[in-house]
Length: 154
Image (cartoon, rainbow, N blue to C red; front, side, top):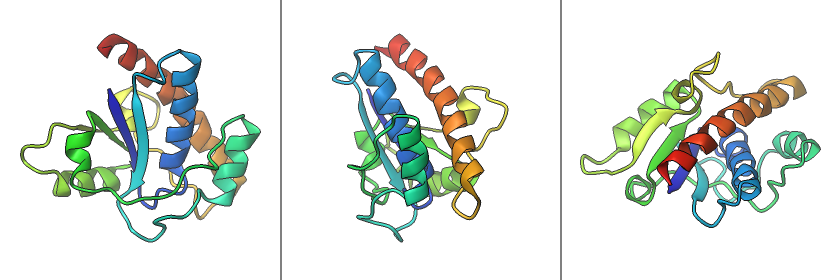
């Protein structure tokens, strides 16, 4: 199975989701069976590391995002991935606009897919440290649900 997480710039929410889910897969013994990546709909941060506040919040919970570098979603991603999970409605709309008619990837909102209290992961970029903690809380919950889905699919 192949999963892609998508936010706007690929420096806050989607790399957090990638890092959290990679660790959950590793702990479950499934890391070799699932491909995980993240990307942004925008091109502003291509090649850059995760936002320093994102990395710090993740590191404080034991997630290492240091190897991740931002990239932009490509049309080929719709064939390379089985599941593309957007962090918010705007990113989902952008993905739907660029999705080829013959694409195999299933698109969805990450939180809505798992019936969490919010249907979007709020963008913490312009806020304080508490926003990055909230993102981690939401992504950890959604990642547990995604792990259960992956187990069923495998």
